[in-house]
Image (cartoon, rainbow, N blue to C red; front, side, top):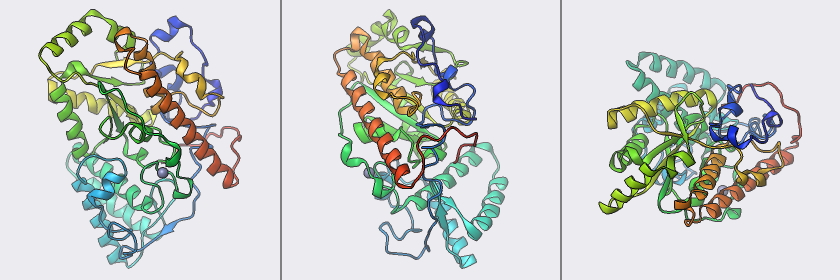
Length: 402
Ligand SMILES: [Zn+2]
């Protein structure tokens, strides 16, 4: 269900804000995205849902990377913002799609937002992938297959259609308006993204690496073993005391930024880390998925934390809602303040208020994200207007497209 952003509380009293973990904003929006630009109801969400199908044949070699249906090269994979090697299962899914095309002597076609198969091919592929899914033994394999298939379809459907950097249709590319910026070297964002959010035009997590680069803000795709391995190897090396998850759920035990980073224990740990000459980078995981998907994503993070550290409590921090950084994001209702990029802005702004962090320019870096968000909103709005769709339409109760 979508609620209009207008129904969101605009301000909280400071005391109420202290333990605000985003959940009161999103609790009842089961299909809405906790941290994704949702625009005025579903209007911007669905801006690309009715684009004409893009049809091609796997042997179409005109495109870079071995034809539109050809394999994903490492260069193409990294072009979308990924840092891992091309996932083996994604390659496998693409090979299966190619085989099916040969068997059927029909072309795959994609339409809508993010590589949804269409037509007769879709019907056959549905049967085939469902059978394969059922035959997989354990839930881990099922998840990995699900993720790989989602990502493979999105990659093929977006090839030569979306700009690799900003994930907008090429004619709406906003890259020239986004000025890269350096993130304080002491922090690292991990955008833990659900496969259904990969290559979504209205995704805001992508802005983080577009601005700060993939070494400072890294994409980690949920269920993609190669990505998760990179993230967890880094966390293992960094140590549990330097990893936090920003999870928009009240039921998770969370601490505010002030509580976490102002307390004496944090400073004594930092001091001893400095004495040992170790890396002091703080790692923050932003869960980038719909509200209903984020619970499973958080569960997986906890399971992996248990494997790595032997305990499944992943330190979580919550953000206050009264962040002044949000002011520029108005006028509402264009913004859902809980989008992924806004969570990053709020975190940086709150850290800026902690004396130890006040000299790293986090306020300026937060501003750069705000500006990029504004550019994204304008690009989505312009696209919508150009396609003759209203941007002021009232909220309809439709399910999320993905
Ligand atoms: Zn672009």
